Image (cartoon, rainbow, N blue to C red):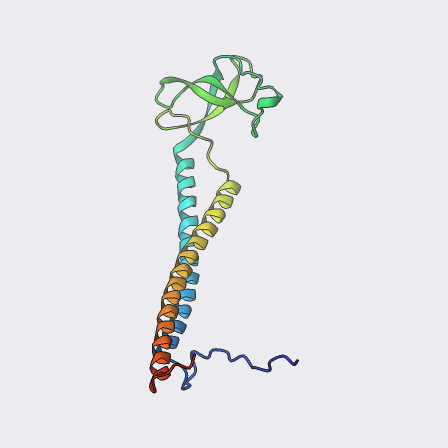
Length: 193
């Protein structure tokens, strides 16, 4: 048995023909606008998110500065079962902030550091110990990841909305076809199917 020799007609919703309905044209416009809005939303959303990440990281970097602190007590050895990915442990440190106030807080320091040893910690203008600011590479990585996720999310929302509109249009089209078949099917009082 030979395969069907039916040719596929491209862009049939845009061409004039007697079988094309108004809902077919509207559906074509919904699809086209959906893809255009998804593409532009992904680009602008991704760029805005990446810019927001960079601005936030730069602000954190501008508000933080490195100070030298003195260990108040010996830093413990975490042991092989409790080693963290950055190989640092929590210990109490003391430092003098830019206003001349002596402060004490817990900070991440290298293990086995003896009391009185000097370590570098990051502090802000209020004397709080924030996390170490991101490096240039980390800022780039976070901004790219944030931009890609925001762009994909924006495109997904737009394409999902277009898909829901198309489903509604398909349901309406099937209801219209059913009504037309009902009209054609019963002029003489019997049904064909």
